[in-house]
Length: 210
Ligand SMILES: [Zn+2]
Figure 1 (tube, helix red, strand yellow):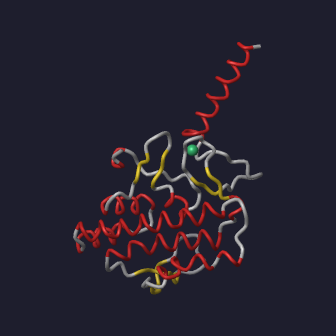
Figure 2: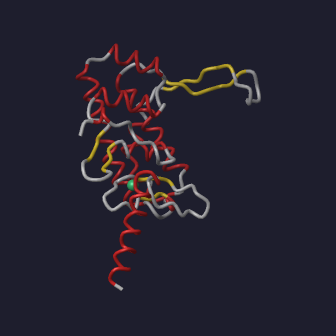
Figure 3: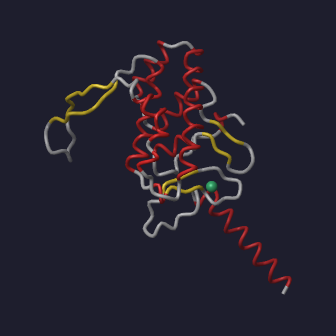
């Protein structure tokens, strides 16, 4: 299905998992938001991971083929990381899980970051803030905020509460930040309601039988 017909889904409560959900099967057909370079630019914009000016600059300086090649790299990264998460969700990460993160560390090593003094907002302690920023030079730099989100996921998220939606055909992952950790669905609007309807039908059927 054409991803342009459907806005990307951001229900994971963790940007690293939202990236995995950029390809999603909700009912039957998978929809990939990062099917090409334009899709990658659009997804990064919707995710708020790259400033609009930087996206426009990279689009201007890159050929469609270059952007498509980066999108292919992003998809490769996504499917590799999906395997990593799926093998470990539901339990706390251990020191031995670091070894398999080598490809992510290699990608992080390619990042070009520097720090910059910017004006602080009303809630900030000082007038100025020291903020990390990135030189958005090549199309490759589009992978860096993604790598950062994946790194933050493994460093900051408790994998005990990383879950897959219980929708029978749904592929979405999320971090359960609810009190009591009772979240079961990607969203009530998508799979939660469907489950309620199915349970209701099953009860009606049982009544008829008994
Ligand atoms: Zn779902």
